[in-house]
Length: 195
Image (cartoon, rainbow, N blue to C red; front, side, top):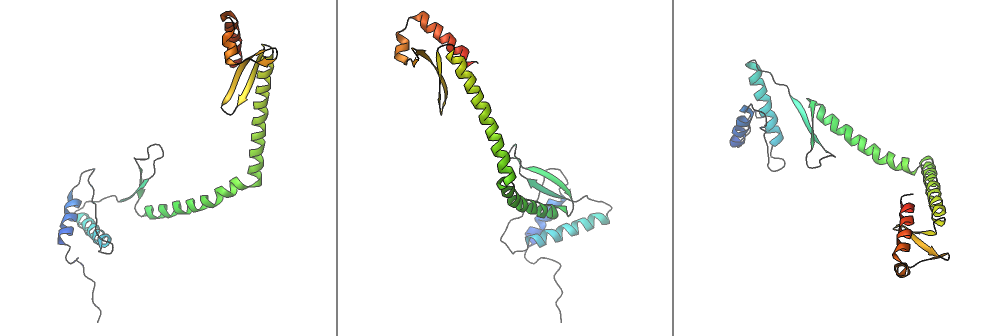
């Protein structure tokens, strides 16, 4: 003989009462939160309670729109997830589709950025950038030479230093010059810096 499944949850009276109380609150902003050990019937208990609650309300002529709510990452405000309101039963499918998309992206992105076409295009862009950069440096050096200045490039940027007899003037030597000469050199240097 088969034993019929129980319709009630044994030993869960307090939990059932709390669920009933929570479901009776019909105001926005109130939620049910269940916690407990895995395998103790939380999901089955809440599903059964919700089904019974909805059936009782339908019998009294009340209807409820049921939705799946998904919390997704908010890139603009990481500590404030975005909420997606989906039709009932769509949430799980949406989650599965997102997992499939992530799997596909993990495969396709490396393929794309490792492709010969991408590498070639990247090289072309870098070469064009280098040509423009070198053109700007050449123009700056030409302009500087006409003002008896030298552009010195370093990993931290460019410096414009005065020349004397074709050789760079040290800071100490520069400071030994009369103020009028220093002012003239500084004026030329500033013209180059905004060039």
